[in-house]
Image 1: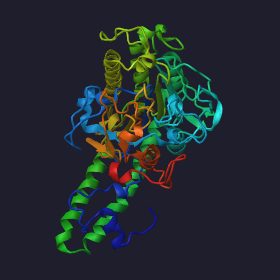
Image 2 (image 1 turned 180 degrees about the vertical axis):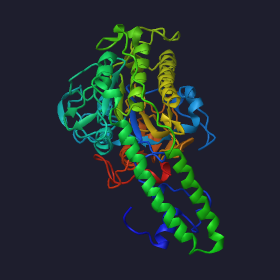
Image 3 (image 1 turned 90 degrees about the horizontal axis):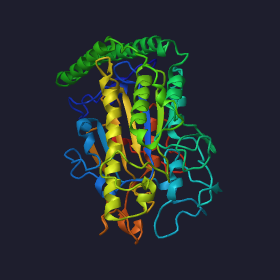
Image 4 (image 1 turned 30 degrees about the horizontal axis):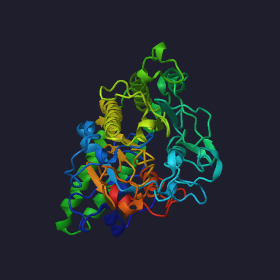
Length: 483
């Protein structure tokens, strides 16, 4: 901070005396993209294919007194860290100019190739892939953009993991890849846990030889910022009316608390054991999928702890595929998830609802792993943002309106959590799904663009100059989601 703060500029930033009250935060004075206790922010993107049974996924209630749905119920223990978003449209998937999007044009959808659109925000062009004759993804995904900004100090700038039946290695088919470095250039997914272990930890001294030095440097930089802020607060305190001084004192107390946390013990990197040889497979047998997924989540949590990487993309399955959930007692069919999604029978919807709840248990498992790792005065989860998104709302209609979307974020991130945030109005059909033969346009109005969420993610990680992402409209969801 080399620019001297004027009294008015400082008071505006700190919220002192301008109606902000005692709850005003020091976050405007501390650079975004950095956690306030001296540790870096991390980003994990997780995506599933084939949609959900929407009415069994959608929570009820108000912004803070919401009730989790049958599918999201396993997240109850992480409630305070959740931002459940209702009304975000994967809208770039709805406007592929000249591209066949669905056999029934009354249903606004893009079929399964919307996986390549979810995190890139870009329309596809004509190409050789899928029955819709579309191209591969047409731009960098948000994980790639953010990693270029925050990943430079780590051994692995970003990591991409394929989970479940994530086949299609090397494929440009947009159903198989959600993460891209550029147009027609997807990131490969590491599906073998043994290969993932080697990629993350082999040749990385102590898992991250420079991590301790980098953490110490960041803490020193933050202390320097806090020293300037404390000095300016002390100066301003002598120039403002007595009635406003308690607010300044509250900010000084907050700074002292941050300084104490910066002096706290740094989390020790613990390199995990290599996976057993039975995990040394390109992808698992169907019945082994739950154990493989747990192992991959464990390895990613360890890599984040050791600062091997700060940005991870995880793709569970792919659009148009899916497991046969033989480990669920209610899954009575040998048909896979995608096939069941097109049945649209009462039994099929029940099985798919149970499959959706299973995926939630895995998401909760990963959050448990992050919360178990001590870091400074808190945990690894306190400094991490995890975005879990589906490119489709429901499999049988291929709808891209109001996609299932959950953000889990810790206390040191810019996100305001413990909330259900809604945009737009949605209606249920008589069959218990969000859309039916009349088309989703008649059952929907007034959501927000996924591209706006991608802009907000970028800003949360310090990319403040980004106003649009991909082909989406300009704008962000900062006011609704960020502190």
